[in-house]
Length: 136
Image 1 (spheres, rainbow, N blue to C red):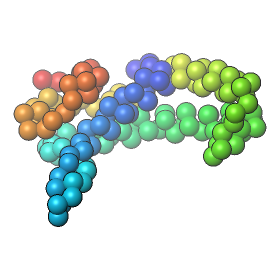
Image 2: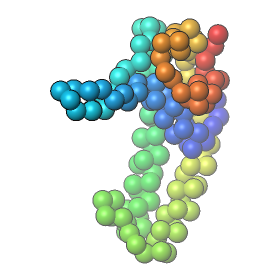
Image 3: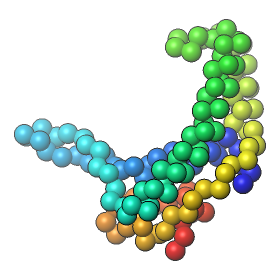
């Protein structure tokens, strides 16, 4: 499958969103936010994790490219820069990196029933973004 790095970053975030959701719970009279994992069957968890690994390979390459561009432009990764010329130069390079078309290994399909949407509060936007990889 041919796609852009920008699309890969988006897919990665959407698949990562299937890790769970934040929920406010009361602990000893104090409200706390805890991450609550979604309850999926093992096949669904396995396919989500395999998709994340496939996508992560491309993200690692993208991050290395942006790090190299920053180094070549003399921008410190930790502190950044306020130089408008360097910012413009980096933004142009980053836009080019995001638009790069790469071949993505086939992602694994996820069964809609495996998402158990009646019990898991998965946002509709996440399901919509991943709809090409969800089968009924």
